Image (cartoon, rainbow, N blue to C red; front, side):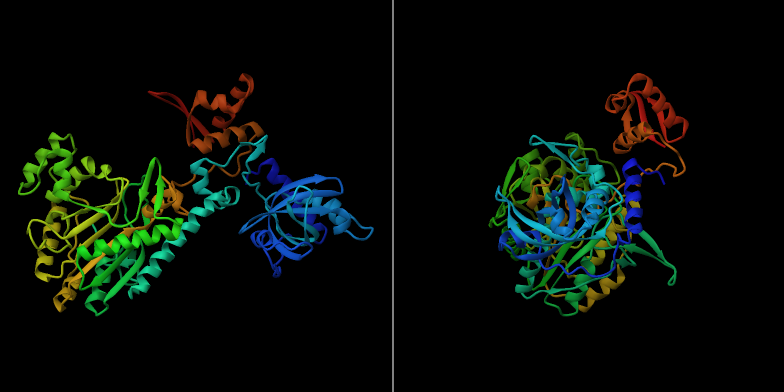
Length: 565
């Protein structure tokens, strides 16, 4: 294992602690009775406290030193005085252990008393300290000089890969995830207060149903059958409505084997709710009240800022039909048009379409390209064509349409809802139509007919309205994050490229490798500039990395690039 100079030094300190009889990773409980937030909010001069956390600042000044301890609630200043810690003649605990063997990032337990410094800083005077966990790798700590921050840990690639380090050195990131939990709690309490029942349904499913998406597939060895990671939980929740529950909801982890971008992750969280004896008009009213409630619970107000936009989740929201929206932004009326007519219209709008796309997919492409991005404030798009909604009830006034809405915010869909189809014969016909689209080549059309679900419908399902909300996307809007990766603790990443463990590298080679690793692929001239090496050292270092088969230089039409092997 290749270690940096600092990592080598920290391991030497670890050995010295053990030589002194100090266990760097003790097993016993440390009896904390306070934290940084409580100390500041309920400050009592002279009060004895027992706290624990990471040492984030150490400022040694002879026999007295200051530090900062970071726990789950924030930071508190520490004051280390040699004579307070070592009351007798033996000062080795301060001189040798504290000054020489502690590092930034170490977990320590502190017993001390509270006092206020001359500049008014609430501080813990340390009476004793205990090593709780030795950090062997230095944290990517930013440096602050004259109010300017240097070397901030801001590279997204590194932050997402090492979320544990990100949370430590960028405490504001934690706030996003606190708000995420507030959102889930608010939504759950809203449903519970309405009398609806939280349930769990299978993640591994014999048939991937309830949405148009490409599934992940696995194999169950004992049953010797293929199983699919769920793309949606809709069909199982409807089975429960058949079974007699009046209202059920679930926060479900869904998996779709599709592209990744700023608003899509292959693993995501959705909320789906189904309520019997309701329709999509009722669900629109319900959704407005729900989102207003959630926005206030998360941010204290119904308003939220997202990029350059200020969004207001206060009910009511505008309602626009799909046909009216397309007609407004394109001039084309989809009502009564054939598949070929819609395809030609899409082509005339320079929208890439092909022969595999059915009528529903074509309309979806037109709306997505020309209309969707225009809806900034919460807006319900209603009455979708039947071909776009195989699980949705036919519109009561127009048999070509369905009773469906999607809620648009900042040009993105965050909720999808139906008056649910409960006619088993109609449902079978819709499934069969989807099957034909799949055979035609539409990779998002379902390839399966869920016979068990149809059997459930044949027993009878009451009139029902259902809604799904993309929780990750919703919290993006409520926390002003443009990327879904910012609201997921551990977003999906490409495998990290690792160098061979037995390769010996010089200090310059290690530094250069760090730059290449962060960039994955970097222009040769840019790498040279960033390295800050002289011409002679640069030649030696880059040749060293290529000779050791750690990195390679490749020529492209755009110039010379360096990447890790």
